[in-house]
Image 1 (cartoon, rainbow, N blue to C red):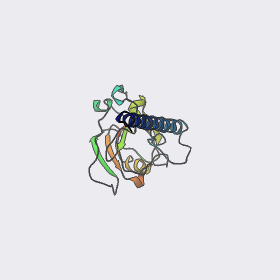
Image 2: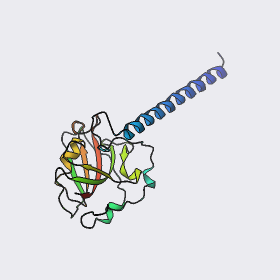
Image 3: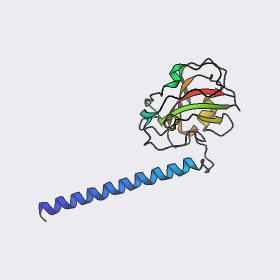
Image 4: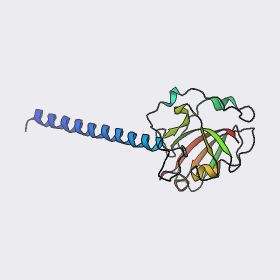
Length: 192
């Protein structure tokens, strides 16, 4: 076999591998799109019924600042109008839910059963691309807390926090909807 034939075969193999990888990416994005749009009918809570993965291809750097919902209790910190940067955790695997205050809110304390409005950003705890973000959709997320509509990590970590807070939730896989540890940065914009 000549060097030219070997090189052509190598290029053909690389082209096929690239095409297969591209097709897999498109298939995964299509599946994620349909799961998010269907509202997660698989009876598994998600943050968009609790941060269901949206396309990671969304460019979070173009997200516009989002105002507080009308009727938000008290005035919110200007920091909550800026999209947070989420850095990966260290160590692991996580054994328990860890809540880290990033901005201390001054509004009312969130109670189980309230309808709460959030902005959030999600990455795998160990690092990687943004998995989901209300910032990329330019729309806060609203759900009832503590009623099983959210992942267990949110149902356990949000009650007791104050409106106007930005918190980091490090959620172990056992309290998440994926089979991995997750890191959320959550802004609590309103609770009713």
